[in-house]
Image (tube, rainbow, N blue to C red; front, side, top):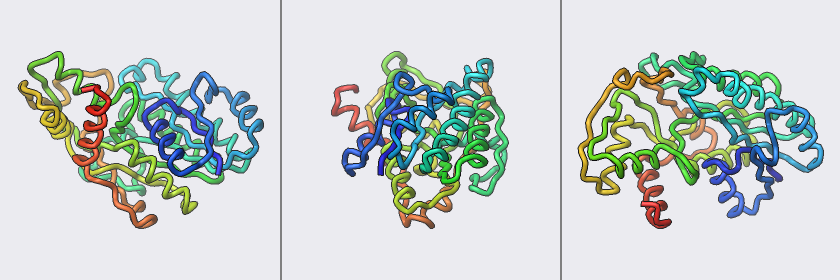
Length: 285
């Protein structure tokens, strides 16, 4: 097994590098400097230089939800056309390809968790760009894993947990939405879950997240863990008037993952606490 890892410096990319070191899996870590996945010619040239690549794991993504409303071409390029490029390249060298999508491909109006059967219906440009990537993967690649996830956090420059901690340092009062419900997903858990599927060669669509909570509940837990003394207030989505609409109830039902691997994803509180302890150990809190 030899893996081409894109987006290697992001939080999921870092999680895979840690996992692969522990599992003695050979990998090539790339980011934009080493490989521009939006350039088809460059991608094809790169994989042909390493003909022994067996897997492509795409951790690269355009994640600026609000910016994508105006800069949609960049989002479509990175989240859409780049997935096409990697899918074509995977076919060229007969490699398996893993790609990650999001709960934001759904509108959040179903009123209950979304399953792998449900049809995407995004309500913002970011969600549209991720649907585009899904379509390219499914229609072009021969051996593919499409994994939808939500609220990913882990070792990396920016994530929601780090944002909350930064906000807490600068403010004595915070207002957080209570009408946005999904599931935090720890990057280390997501990488391990993906590896379980790869070992089984269980191609297809999966929803993989940790357990469910609201944004408010997550923030409340984080602030309690760091013993913040400020005041936390509940807010509604419309209070913030952001450029991009967000789905309100975008829980992903993990049906299919346990049935395939026999593994259960951990509770959101357990993984959030583990990550905060990791930040404390590094002196970041």
